[in-house]
Amino acid sequence: MRNRDKTIIKKMCEEIDVIKRIINGLSETDFLANDEKQRATVMTLINIGELVKNLNQDFRLKHNMIPWKQIAGLRDVAAHGYFILRMDEIWVYACHDLPNIEEQIKEILGNEEEIK
Image (cartoon, rainbow, N blue to C red):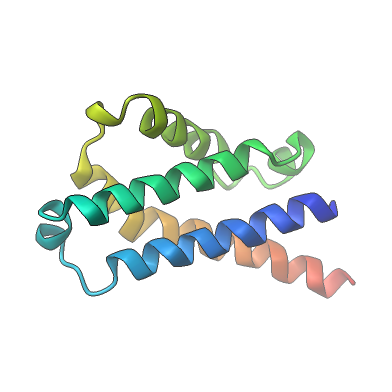
């Protein structure tokens, strides 16, 4: 793994942790009623998508079990079409999809550490 890719996916894990802190203790109803939490979550998702766009194509192809294109696509919609985002879908993504992505990223990092 290139050092740049490793740095990027570590940063992705940090950003996922930010989202976990933002939504910690919230119910879906609380989240949907809190514009500040929604905006903070979406901005952090934009950051994650931007990080994905900076990963080497070979890295993304090698680790194609992670939905890189969808992550980057969510960034584009969030950045350029915020008004069409459905916050209930953002909630599901933040609570269910991101933990799975984080687990996969940590597995990649763990495997890399074992190699060295």
